[in-house]
Length: 345
Image 1 (tube, rainbow, N blue to C red):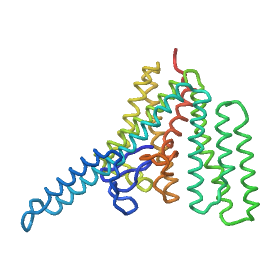
Image 2: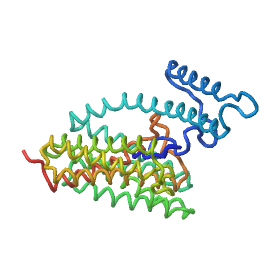
Image 3: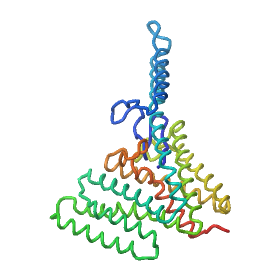
Image 4: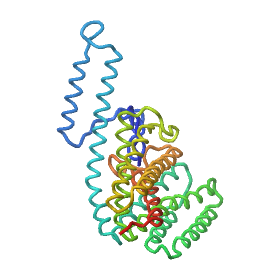
């Protein structure tokens, strides 16, 4: 998920969309998992508070300046809290991903399928928040079958699954007696798994290509570094909104930083993997754009149902869908690029 935030708040895809000193209008509690970090931040805040106390009728600093510095202290503490949880979650998850990517086969298939099922369930839960009675059984079944089709791309599994679930979801609406929202529930029961499972199966298909491990590494690293650059640049220097109605704290500065970082990453990795520069640059641009709009697409879904994160499954990151939204688009782009331009030697 692209974290291209403004300097005053957090963006989407796994973190708070509001200012980091408030969540749902309430102050954020500084519940740092490491006591030493909490103690340090407490000292900083206390020292800043003493410095800002007025000496006399007007004080050492003007009121506006004191308020600005106090807000900066709160921002520092809140960002540290979120960042620690992100790092701890990453320390747990990254080795699992690395091992699965390295061994490939059923190991990688199992990991991606679990992530896709978790993301599909989150999607269906979000839909039910808007009172559309989507079917968990049909939705999750379609995701599993679409993922299985990634193991056997030439088989008709995906077509059969899509046809069967489309019909059964309509039958489900009939059995529910033409209740309000039945048409929307049918469409969303099919659309969610097609969005998640239909794109996630490209992870398996990409890993199954000749030298697929290199393509997967390129897709993951390009997306993650694009993501990181967008987050840090957007957080500290971002001023100009980027698709504000979809993700209020995304910024143009963060998006551009992500685009540049992703392009450079793909180009450099391309040289290592024997992809010429004249192909590495457009690949990097395509992957970075795909990652950016993959993140924004999930943000659109969340805006439509009025939530901040798809779930709270992963501390500091949100839900499974928040974690894979950018990759769903990016890996799909890399797969078809790899079919078009296989690596040399």
